[in-house]
Image (cartoon, rainbow, N blue to C red; front, side, top):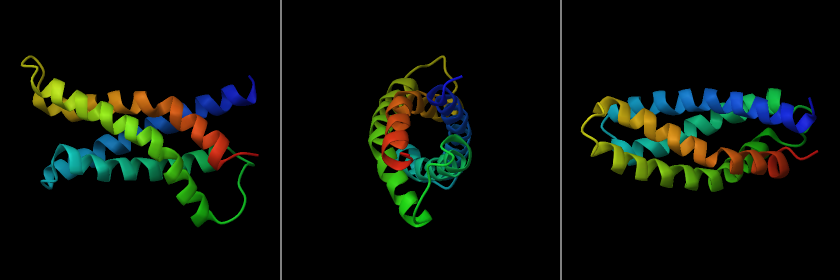
Length: 135
């Protein structure tokens, strides 16, 4: 398996872990009364932290250098582009799914987060590989 395929696979696994964290944090935020949109900002930041931890240790090994603090800020900045796409798709999905009578409302946040995450994944991989963890 080529290095880029191995990295893409590991990035996808990290993304699934981030998706789980994102959904879990969103449901906590909703329970605290933050709502679909403010709660998603909080859950997205938590998911970015989880994926950064996994990607820096397992996906892009050997590509680190310098300050961990600076690496975190570069990673957060790199994920912002995919995050904006992610949030836009999430928002549209919430709007569409909330009006779908056959869908239980408890599933709306989870499905919307999944749609947004898929939309931002390719952009996030490219920005992580070539901006944050370049060799």
